[in-house]
Image (cartoon, rainbow, N blue to C red; front, side):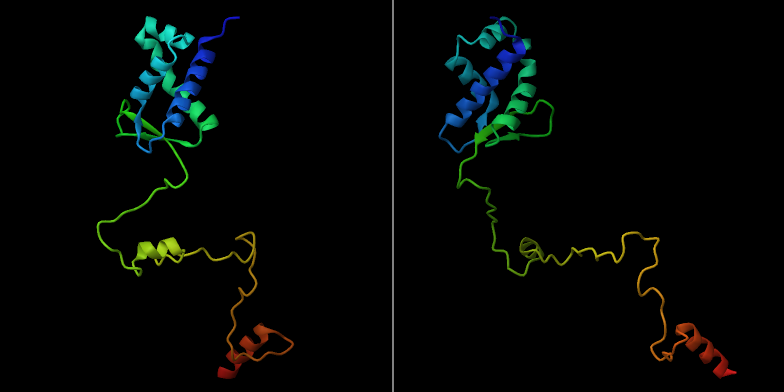
Length: 169
């Protein structure tokens, strides 16, 4: 039973990432080197025979490989060296204990704003205030402002305001 070129490409991409995962190095591996090593490791694979006929047929491999990596190999990291469209791509397998570290060339004091940002109390970031009601068009509780010395009687704040005006006359 013959398979399609897309299925062969996906299978070769799986073998490509399995080879990267099998390396015991924490160093970045060039995608071109890994591709050549995968070709050498699997010379009888149908995809290798397909691209041997024409080098341009290899063009769709990177998109297929990236979709396979995201779905089936989340532990493999990808890094592109530069911003050019055809910049070299590097891969490495993430292992516990190889997390990212930030080694600064000088000692940063604990009072530095960026150190405070890690603790969660960043001085430049202001947390949004909680909304009092769901809609901004509704009258909020406490929206009516009254003087603190207004008389609190049964007639309400308007009556106190009116009495204050009439007392001035």
